[in-house]
Length: 496
Ligand code: AMP
Ligand code: MG
Image (cartoon, rainbow, N blue to C red):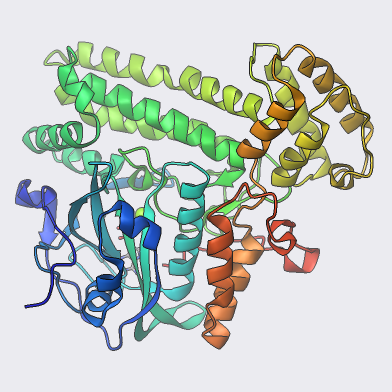
């Protein structure tokens, strides 16, 4: 008998058996730990040393089922690029169980890349090293940036190759952590089958687990819908504030917990353009930067549609109620969107007039192909409207033509005169809001390449460490700069 690595609870496994398929992970040849997230282990009350032991690594790679685990693949459906797919589900992931963190919240522990499941369809159930490192880097960066997200507890190697279009890759497993791996598509799965009993079980599970306040509402299921809409409005606004493009906002990749989930083809923009798309498979640009709020609302309309049988026995009333809730999304989003951008430009008392100011900045950034992250980061240098403008600031180097920038700086600094904060306070706040480091594509790609070519995880480690403190003014300049033209990564791939 080995020690208990996880104090697992298995609340999802007590739901009716049509919610999942229970099965164990498929063992691999040679489990090896790449990285364990000590800080997250602590939050989850886990013993990091035990997880690093050979027993621990065996569990994290799927070679051993941990004591107390009742592993299962969750069933779900979804709209993929707008097309309905009634049967998806965890095709290469297994929920091992749930743990209660130091914050008294419940977290799923899931292996991704742990072998085939009944939902694998034609897939091998495995994950390649590149996508696993990518998800580790970007999801942990999002967490450090304060964006709700699934987390990465560990990355391991399997010692087995996986075969993808571009040849064999080292196989890897990610241990993913989430408040709940429940998606819009999970609700759609049961709604499409007319399984109202299952829908009610699922909705009750989600309310108890994620939105307990909804229980006391007059209509708890409406309160659930509104809670998810609010969480998504906030989340998508946070993506927009960082120049983040999710890339595959299918309804099966939209979390009911309001977390960013599924880091396949996602990317942070370097040069700003509202129509930017990175994902190779997103040929129509459905999930381009500026479409993200609209797509979120479309997904939420599908969530609302799934909940109709729970909202009211009167069908007309159910539809009206759901429609009103979904119609509230644009205002909720816009509120977060504007207040976040106002914070980014150092305003503590934003008003309606600031919308135009923010829109103008984004417009001139797009015209100049200015780097999104650095433009906002450097603005803090001009936060004192009484100080002379230093034209040697790297801000000016981001714009080829500076006439419009000069004009904008003038208008903005005039506006700052009406803001109650002192320049020092403002500068501090801006530097707490606008990161110096984001996981730039070319750096993520370089870290992956050095892991592939030389089994060297040094660049991955360095990047991950640096991204843990993204607002640090002493950030390594090698990690803050945009790519040189020859380094630029123009496309990303799901890597599945
Ligand atoms: P995604 O594009 O990652 O959202 O995945 C869509 C669906 O394909 C989900 O049901 C995944 O579990 C499944 N899937 C993706 N990659 C694989 C794979 N290598 N093996 C089996 N199923 C997969
Ligand atoms: Mg997915």
